[in-house]
Image (cartoon, rainbow, N blue to C red; front, side, top):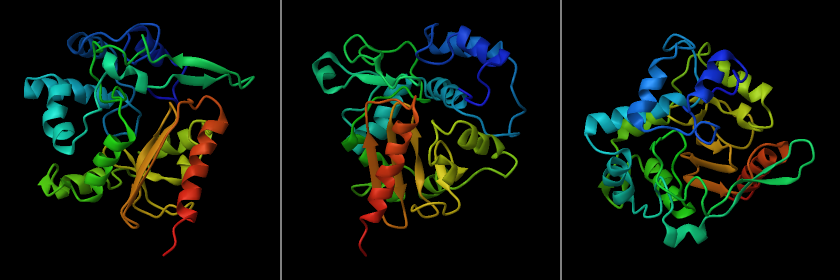
Length: 273
């Protein structure tokens, strides 16, 4: 989902073939999804530049094929179960749906709230045809905190090794050259209502932003990401803290993203050491 290429023919084809969630064409199962993707040309040569989202869903298909089990089963056995993440999955069962709030998207012109996704009969009310790691999981503050605390611990949880320490170091270290990072800079400057404050990150690890210079209160080495549906989660190795903000207002207007920025400013101003 390259926000810097919206309106181009290749992005039009991606939408038409149902390769991204919540768009007019529903996403097919993983085998059909990867087949459709394989009919489209690459936008850039591999390694030429950073790009958002599709690679994670390709990885979802590859993990399922290599392990011979659905992605959710693999994640539950390797990550969710050991971390006690009982409320993290690709859908919310009926007996828990009352805990999921309605998601809203304000009108960019009027600010009026419109329903983006209802809890009941919404996107997460039933198992999806495609289990995608590019943004398909639903979770809670407690579950997400357990995951990020494991990363802060260098890959361990309650004395149990979940990820190797070198793997965590690779995930949370900037992997981009200045040339590859050009698209990240463009997104932060040209789509400011989606990325208010994100221009301060500087780099990207494996699946998350990594701060490579100090542009605001957060120190170098902080890692995490902001979600377009109004979420923000980062871990800070220097201060050994994790912050999580889960709202139900999508970032279709600047105020949603500025709220996230204010949350982090308030958090760091509260430190007294």
